[in-house]
Length: 378
Image (cartoon, rainbow, N blue to C red; front, side, top):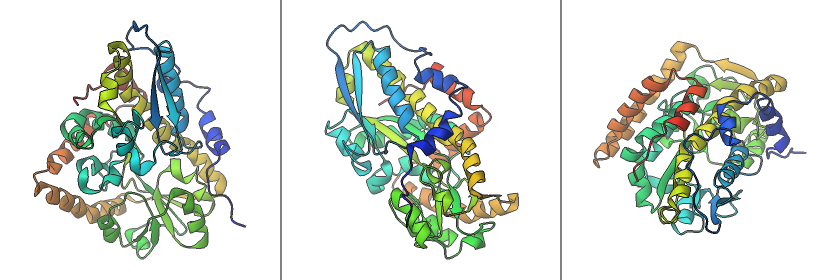
């Protein structure tokens, strides 16, 4: 009998609970213990209600911090700004975030440029191989700094305002056979979301586009041989029970963006609007920390218990991967430049900011997002 591939709340809860006894800055901020940047609330009218839509199921690693943030906003506003969560695609699905927010079905929600085809090419820069920094919190800060210049115009074309970017840990490989060199990938059927066909071709793999809940069964039945994903996906969806080799690669990034309805936010009283906007970057940063940094540390215990072999590529072999895929990045940038889209400038800016921030600790980056958030010009 096939096991249920859906993640359980117990699986995630046990892994996350290990960190709750040792509160850090991000957890303190979510709990409302850090009020830096919060304005005095002078609004005395009736409570204002927003709807926040996202596609994540209740067991997703991203859900607990989202719920905590909505409680934080309610408390910090004295109950004057109430944001109701609609998860599991109950308000709008992963493919309909922009439409749902633009039309006012929800005032705020998760919006994926991945599903907008060629309409948002610069926002999809993180899908390019080896562009996302190893520490996804660095990528979250970089996205915030570069939003006004590169990403806001693309979101504006969709009729929404850019909210924030929760960067995901760059993708590794979980496979049914060990991957120690590029040649080990040749001919494998790989499950992956948001991966460019050009990347797959360069690596010699066949992409199989499956919904996340179907990956477990697909691995078990041999429909796919491997999955390119992250620890916060591998473990909650129990893929490590059927694929016993984990190769650290840090290939492509991605993440969960939020967008908001600019007219709805503009109508908020000034103090409530400031509270909402000032919290966007810290909210992204703490989500990235929990899902992309903290969870990966704790996931190692799950891999160990399941007998998963953890493979680290030799430096020379990792460089082979990078050399093989750099032409893919170059071709992506060259293609956009033909249409006067500044892809090369974006890549250069990402590299420069990676150098600036890569030595900062998670706590330093969290503190920066709270005390010195980047004001995004919409």
